[in-house]
Amino acid sequence: VDLAPLVAQLGSSGVIVDATDRARYEEPARGRRGTAAAVVRPATLEEVRAVVEWARTNQVRLLPQGANTGLVGASTPGVSSNDGEPTVVLSLERLDAGLTVDAGDRVAVVAAGTRLSALNAAAARHDLHLPIDLSADPSLGGMVATNTGGSRVLRYGSLRRHVLGAEVVFADAAVSVVTHLDAVRKDSRGLELPQLLVGSGGALGVVTRVAVALTPVPEATATWWIEPRDEAAVPELLAALEQDPAHGELLSALELLSVGALEAAASHGGEGGGVPFAARRPPVVLLAEWSGPSTAIDGLERLFARLVEAGLANDAVAVPPARSWALRHGVTDALRVRGVVLGHDVATPRRALMAFRADARAAVQALVPRAEVSDFGHVGDGGLHCNVVFPHGIAPPTSAERAAIRGAIEAAVAAHGGTYSAEHGLGPLNAARWRATTPVVEQAVIAAIKRTVDPLGLLGHRDHPYNHASLGSEEKPDRA
Ligand SMILES: Cc1cc2nc3c(=O)[nH]c(=O)nc-3n(C[C@H](O)[C@H](O)[C@H](O)COP(=O)(O)OP(=O)(O)OC[C@H]3O[C@@H](n4cnc5c(N)ncnc54)[C@H](O)[C@@H]3O)c2cc1C
Image (cartoon, rainbow, N blue to C red; front, side):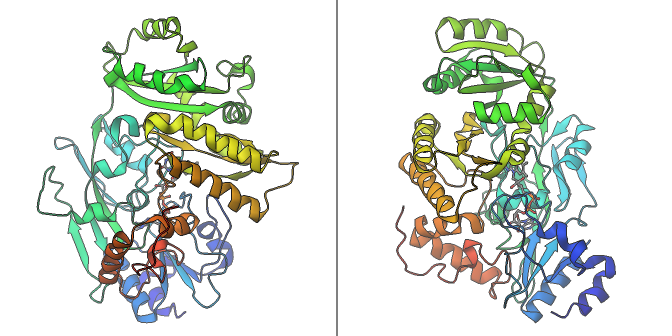
């Protein structure tokens, strides 16, 4: 590809071709590394437009990339992407200037490359935050493109709920820029374009700025670890915590860790025997968080005494929030260190989650008895990371086993009325399932939008479902 016009426009620091310098943009957080023809790093809206114009002229695929923490293979090029169709990574990391916080309106407007941590550091000066909590530090553009969830969806919803506006560059013939950043809280002028970009995975437009609603930072937070009576008691425990008249409204997270996930995180973080209930090794433990006025989160001991007396919990212990979350957020890395991880980001209606979990675990154990199901996740919102681990020292999964495990988990999630992508968005990893299960009319709507905003089909990973040749065709989905 002829990069000279881009070098002239963005300067040499804006265009990376050297293989060593490209490496970190090509290596996904999960999955196999591909190859990019180049990485371009625009620093302004005008430069983003220039890159899109260049891609149209040269018919080159552009892959928007934020912090590259995505987990569905959508932010890095395919393994053989230089065969026939080169991909240029469009990194938004330099597009991070001009953050503004309107404390009175509780709104922030941020450039797409801004990290969540930088937004929250600026918002904290006004006792505000974007209450999305996860162990990675994504960019705001990537968060829009994936509809980030995290641990506090139970109370605050996923990113979609916080998006008030966006500025987007499309790859239509005019390389249009659509700007909706007034951040009006209510607006009923039909469909909202910024919301359409939520979850679009870089395949509809390049998000350059985002307006988000902020929330007051709670005065106090408490975290407790709970040993449920057994796995079947988890839904009842959630209901009891939510219905508690004094504290129910203040519940901000309820996480589940299987024994495998907890022990991996504990040994990875050097916690040794200091983890809650370590000696008894219960099959699952829960981590609950409450946040609000300090006077209101007192009295949790009495709540737990009642839950133990009612036979829903065996035990509960208060652990400081920083330590609790360090342990919880350590799980993903800890499992990766332990061996090969097959991740499955699923959710069901909350009432069905534990039944789904039992079915999925049984199906995986029957298929690959040598693997460990070290699942964990956000039970408070019905989400679970159904991660299957092949520890170092045992045979890694064959590709047939990978496919069989994914198929079994996705079949179980469908049987319980759930979703195969709870919070990680769409990408090559789940494209086949999207095509197989999305009704024809929905695919046709996406195809019409795609044709309007990206008629040459240049944006997003080539294996993103919105880039599939049959998008919107009359092929009948099998609803599997
Ligand atoms: C350790 C770890 C823990 C995680 N925990 C969670 C969790 O609890 N909850 C959760 O929801 N996710 C989690 N994730 C996944 C990940 O952090 C999110 O999906 C995140 O929103 C991705 O943002 P990013 O900036 O890294 O995007 P990238 O990975 O760079 O890109 C992701 C997608 O967004 C597109 N994209 C990026 N920027 C733009 C833009 N400006 N315009 C248009 N498209 C764009 C890309 O093309 C790609 O399709 C975790 C990841 C890791 C590594």
